[in-house]
Length: 433
Image (tube, rainbow, N blue to C red):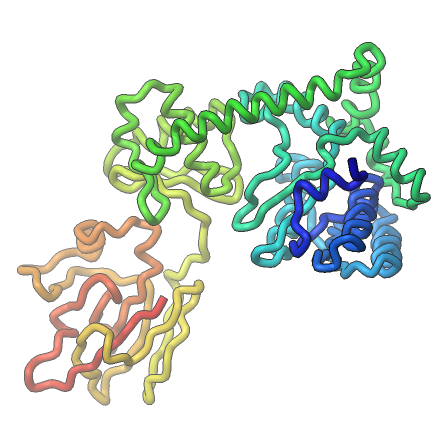
């Protein structure tokens, strides 16, 4: 069997890959193996990315080492500087999140992300999951292959021990950096690596291999649950990703929790604890119908509107924003990545603004309004509700004003003040998102 069989089974000869390259032993061995594989497969496209956390006084020298190594092996290297906020779950968690965020922002479409975790890392991950009281999903530890956003993420070294990686490095006389923080047992993972796993492996030499099998079995059980619950979950999720929770009211708590976890996973969300999941159900899903509950889960939040749960990423408030639109009515770029407004024959019909009327776009209005097709006037909040617009979307709908008169909520309604009469010139405005 080829020394590179684990890569040959994972990759194809013309694949594009991005390696997370720290310069340590693990990623150095994997980079070297990829360079050897590229000699066999000239069509393999290989890049490396080094994340500069700035946490060590030696960090700049690590960058220099990685540059030298990549130059020697003719591998394109990108260095990304990140800021680590230890308030975000501790320094270990914050550094890991910053690293994966940098990788997510740097990986190209259709490029496969490779990371160099090995079998001993898998043991540490499973033991940390046990410490947290995780269920089968947590005990599955790290998967050899998974989707990360739109990209495939592979860990081709999970079947190899650190001892095997050290033997490879010695065989090829590789050089790598040593992060001094790896010797600090105050960090949970280091404590396991330095003090716990050596004892376990001394007592039971095949402990790491047995742990890897247990993690794989837990992963298989989770995959089976994914398959069994996929049809039920698909029936609950709308095209916009929101989840209809009313059919879940009659489900067992176990089935309901399993579906909620898989809904969160589809959004690549931070998985809550058992207690957090119960809070999501009790405080958000089962809140009063007129409430606007919100539960923060990592960088995202879960909100309820009517009979649906929504997975959202907080956006900049646009309430105070006001844009002037003047002749010759060139396309108007909207803030918050909302698109553009343009004069277009396919747009909604409005009356032409008079020469004396100043045209503006705003994102907040107060008062009651008469709208086309409805009798009587209604407060704007009521109009939003009747149109089924969730509260967090309301300030992201462009409101077109002539002077101080609301003319239209683009894509939702036109007021009587904005409707063209038979004697007036029709103006067509399109909101292109």
